[in-house]
Image 1 (cartoon, rainbow, N blue to C red):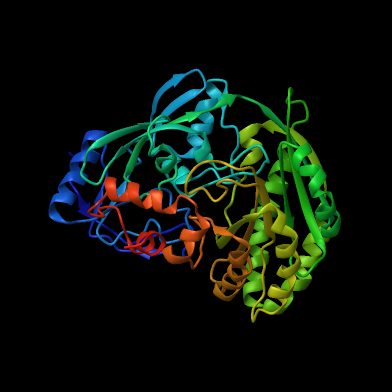
Image 2 (image 1 turned 90 degrees about the horizontal axis):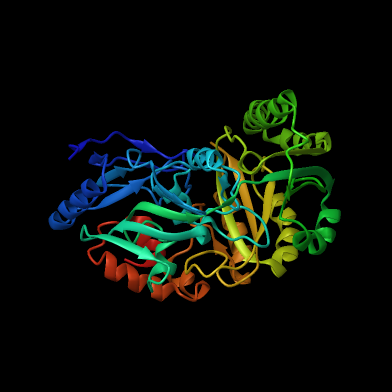
Length: 433
């Protein structure tokens, strides 16, 4: 077994969460994970798994033992469309592995740095009316419970709807089986438009396309619409220069410089946003699915994302300009809006309904809490559910009415981790102590 070492200070990707654990655990086998959890359980200690640190909430904050799964990141098996991997595998590694075998994830978000365990456990999602969270692709998991037992949970197990999206509260995921699909190409159609025209076309575009989303630029009436559809051939590749120019130079290097300017001189932000929105150009290209879904994100930020019933989106979008105009600071990032269909994962944001997701961001080092609290106050009365990995201010008392199966999930937690080996302050807040 690996020997625990003294932990150094940990900071998440967004820079808004820090923690100093007492020890770092780096198990290399499932048996080592089980033994370390059993030892912690017997001595009254806590163990918190940390993935890539891409959650903005304190869900991965560890004040006792911090456990990394980077040594459990390999392929277990491929059986047709069912692919079983160790849970510490990063999504970008999974995507490359699947491509080698003629497979792909049916849908992805726009970041591929998360681990498989972290992505499914927090409700990571992409966009598309016939898709839900990545957890909806899970066909089975192997996890280590709070007593150190190794438990396999398949589709016929009554706790399966809880285990697919467990917030790290039920156990440590060590293996995940995903239902994948044959590899496919996407045709990306990205175009600047007036926000009013985007909103007017959504009812037609959402059912007619595989994946659709848009970005609205604060202080303007402009938006960028992004539509991705499956196509048989990769026959319109984006040139290497255009890809570098758009996705690296403009979206990262230039955008970070603009954000730094806006942080230093907030009065310039509305004019910069207007210029940026008008400077957008259309582009259409094809590519391997994961390479179209995912783009490099090197500009650090903090984020809140709220799921709302799709019918409530017009009310939310119409209120956002008033919220932003009333803030004592400026908003530099565009607002991102995505769409998913219903699923049956108990703590999925999209449980049982067609959803719209509204994501708001702020550049690292810029004030965000009044902005995020105002957006939450707008979305919560509409039945909104906060993304588990994005900042929010909700607690168990007001989350329980938003989730039909909330108490069923807590009952599974009581069964698998009665001593709360895996808890921390965030989990105590959102699930109850």
